[in-house]
Image (cartoon, rainbow over all chains, first blue to last red; front, side):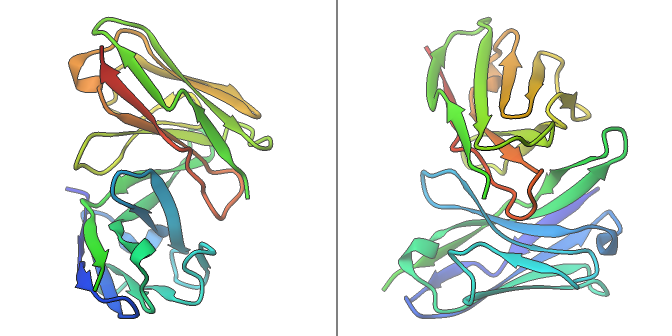
Length: 123
Length: 108
């Protein structure tokens, strides 16, 4: 079964750090670009960060640039998000997402999502 | 960055109704648009990619259309399990792969 399982969320004080992990199974992890998307309580989806299949290219939303670091270990089939200098506005469910290329249309989409891990930034 | 505006943000409908949700892009994105369904407490689920291609396993009552800057998601006959929030996402200008603000479909 194709699956993404996030872990590492929790309660952290403002200014603190946290590392999220996403364990992939059921597919060739090293062949896919991966993303983090978050959702604050009661709000919509916010695109956070991306990493290419080999880890050579990364992207960050302006809201997290300089504070978050995305990485991956293809030998462990695991995606990471290192978060530092956390703020109250970073409180959200964080989803790990797989990007798939569809040959029938030559386009991409986010076809596999993890269950999400909750990060709460509060004193 | 490309902005996506969904309308309406909320709609109330009955089982069996035909429902249409619109997503407008701030600039042309060809057909690089996907639609997702999210139920409370669950992760989003891919419904449609490339503006009109149904993801495997998605019921045929869902359809998508459009290109350029205007797109629609249509549910031909709303079922009880379709009450959820729907999001569009552009995959033309990467990154960021922005999402629309969402449309919540509730039972009338």
